[in-house]
Length: 251
Image (tube, rainbow, N blue to C red; front, top):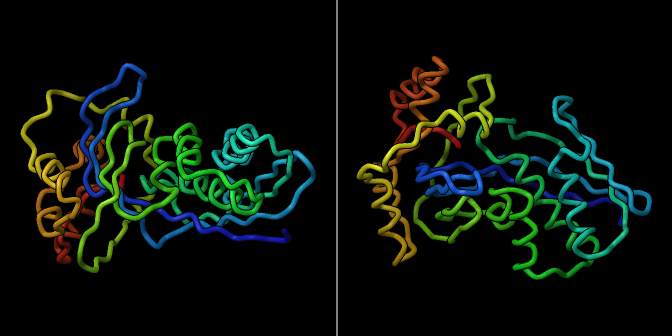
């Protein structure tokens, strides 16, 4: 191998309900994940035996063992016993802390690409297990598409829908870290919810009606972010005034 490139696609949440806090410290959620054409580029080059080198064009991103890309490489080595080296170059285009799953998608791209490049021939089920050990969003981002997501975000069921939609993303200039958001979210009894009812209704036919979805989007983090960041509400109102079918948070 001289050089290989794998795209790591962003995702958005088309609605997000936080149902309860789990005994393991995570939260059970209910959401629809959708991948976008926005993506990071993950470039692979040879390195010395057993060596993992991660380089990123965003100086704010840690490129060492704390990076999910680094961890994904090490997870593959531990699972297969290979001692091959790799140099991974991240060209970041997905904003950090924007709910778009950039880091998780980069890790998923590493699992996909190195399974192919190193000819590991891991089964889809084994890759899913490794992905789940890296992070809640990584299993979905191995494949992408559209899926109803449950559990802590690691259980997903692919669904289909009709129509051609475009998403306008507005970055307000600040990051929202998942840990902070979940820590500050007040979870009460889950009220009657049109969004939850809609997602339950598609469990049987596995086909999504976009008109109904966009009419009942809910995101439990919206009120928290509106109260914390005054930039959020006017941005949503501007999108509504421009004729958007629905306006919500990306994560």
